[in-house]
Image (cartoon, rainbow, N blue to C red; front, side):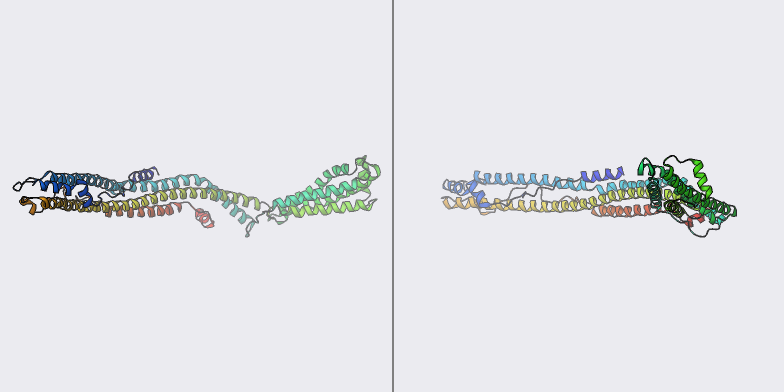
Length: 473
């Protein structure tokens, strides 16, 4: 977008400070000028001396002084007029950058659209691999559904953290309860009993978690062999949990009787004599609690994934692939939108500067005309002032003369010729129509950039079931 910034720099650089607002041609005070020149006194003095002589056609020194004063003021006005006119003319010429910048603006807009196309092409090359992966995972999911006769969508599991907390809670509860029961007869008391119970709790709850996570789903599998595996593993689990918790109960009986030195042969003997033959009711309660907690772990474990084996894993792979593609696509679209917004912002700023420039040029054109009118009016005032000042002198002169006044006193004096002619103002106006055309073209280019963005962003393929079916076809 450096081309647009260069245009903005040119437009900004063409700005001038406002022209001075002070009055360039102040109104003339004839009475003050007469007093400053001393026309009354000088007229009376020349009249008493009968000057100028009756037959002379030459100006008196006083009349020459009046003419010199008018010439001086005319010269100052002409110089101010030329300076101000040059300022206005220069401002107008510098403001006519619009037509010259048409090609630059067109070129910049084309470059912006080319950048949008190039950016999308580059993004599509980067996105192609992610899209292929997402489509491949989708085909895997569809193939899995067809193979296993699944018509439903996979069940998304979003509360795994809660289920793990439940497992941890079950382990802690059983560890504490077992430790409390084992504390009786332990030389280390409650702490020793809990430490001893942690391993048994892990075996009990962990076994239930494994069965709920991997064995129970096998009952839903389409293959009879896996259903048999599930049934067999469930049978093994039932025996495992009963024997384990029965052993914990008998171990507790022996632990209370013998303390920390419980022999394995004694434990096996107690189990052989009867799984549910306990010396104390607390041991039976301990066994029952262990079975309940293990079954709770089984129930909790079944909710970690989709109930159909493997379905959740395939669905997650597909979800991750699609999410990766969509995230990358979103980043590409956001980057493209940023390019568009930056371009439109700078083009809009160019448009605003064009309009501001047009307004200032119109003010300069109007000011130029007004300057010429003011100068013309001032020159006319100088001629009137000259005639009035000379008349003041002549009237004072005539009142004190003893000889007749020169014949020219009866004719109106001719005003001095102005230094700058009062003809037509040289033609110099801004082609505002052309500038408005450039501004309108800039607005069109902004719309074209928006349209180009819409066209290019549509090249980013969406990811949906329709696009997948199209790719399969």
